Image 1 (cartoon, rainbow, N blue to C red):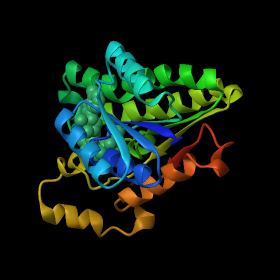
Image 2 (cartoon, helix red, strand yellow):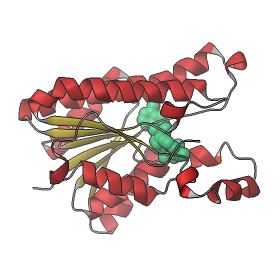
Image 3 (cartoon, rainbow, N blue to C red):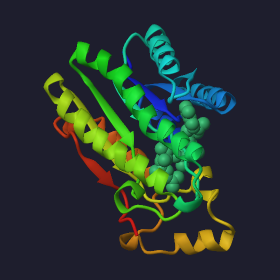
Length: 244
Ligand SMILES: NC(=O)c1ccc[n+]([C@@H]2O[C@H](COP(=O)([O-])OP(=O)(O)OC[C@H]3O[C@@H](n4cnc5c(N)ncnc54)[C@H](O)[C@@H]3O)[C@@H](O)[C@H]2O)c1
């Protein structure tokens, strides 16, 4: 039977690359996202290409919605081998101007969403004594980010959550790791750049000094974290590019 992976934020820029890559590897992909149209359309695309995929609508910040998504995924796939916590949002606002509601929105989706999805899936993984969870954090959670303190703090929270959950789940043969990409070419990062010229400047930075993370780098690392040789690797955060 194909291994089953839930990818939250699966319809987004990074999430869709993860879904396509893991489906190509023969996994059955549960694309869990708030964006219904984009999610259904990607699931269809994967199926047309010969892969296995299904869409589940979810708001990762809502416990009942996460519960329904996991139950439905289990009913349709009968097991969950892997969870990728990829759903995330960001905005650019200086702390002095930050509305409390915006702070709460970012924390709710990025940090609480990671907690709720991991909690729901971990219960099943512990019963089966097998599973892997990968959280998509960010280099900003390590380095900080001016005009996005809420985002950086949420991702630092994801990193600490990852380490803590890894300790709890290690006795149950479930690993939990985080990846921390640098700026990656997706709608999220493009939204913060005013012109093509500014984007080209970012691309021109030599990799060891930062530069852009590619989706291939992200998918390759996730493949490794879900592979047999990584079965004892847990509680780690992998920075894909040096944050500047
Ligand atoms: N793009 C970057 O430069 C970058 C760098 C480091 C980390 N990341 C992280 O990678 C992840 C994916 O980012 P991306 O650039 O692909 O962004 P994106 O905006 O393209 O995708 C994010 C996805 O999350 C979904 N989503 C948002 N709120 C949701 C909710 N409440 N419930 C379910 N799904 C929800 C969106 O519908 C979207 O499909 C995020 O966690 C982000 O913080 C991105």
